[in-house]
Image (cartoon, rainbow, N blue to C red; front, side, top):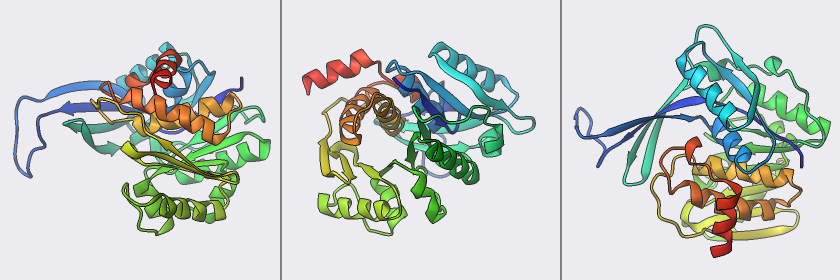
Length: 304
């Protein structure tokens, strides 16, 4: 089995649970708060590692207590953090997450994440690896690292989230692009939402394939996911679950997808497994701490 290398953000998530969101200018009492490791990059790395795949994290943190907590969490989950660089000045990234009735809204203070540079990377990509990136770190670094990985023969996964305008050539270095319906609409200029017909979603995915991505996966929340590749269009139905917190579900999908790609599965096979993993993650509070093990995902698939 090859290694998964995740290049991206590391945040401390400040999760506030309340019965409802306050109106502008209003203060409400009775909320609960938790401090949990997060950031799209860290979440995806943990999702991969908990599935038993050798995983490395690449990114930047500040010189503060949150950085120490995040490094410790990575170590506890057997994630190699050799390429997590400490930068002086900016604080470690923080995400404020408001959770109400299982749904969430997120505000991110990126901090050290936006000071990450490709020059900080100590390891060079290898052909037997899967390299993963998102848009929570500087675009120039993401583009350079994915290009290096692609040139080395590694498989590459880009999660176009949160959506950022990017150079057209970026997708030429991407084997599998993953995005939700909102990001798909933003990336293609096509009016797509969670209720759009599959043909419309597939047509939008093919726009990105026309720009260079070898396969495109659209995650559609409770509907499931659509995989569009040279092999055709495959729909993966979501597995019914009791939702506690959707934070990190998309990251769980991406990390699990990368883990199964590292095991040699096709994008469709990997996406089916990733969908089951994501359905497990939403049953617990938080992002990284909610990532399931391979035994939990296997049990979920057995019941599907």
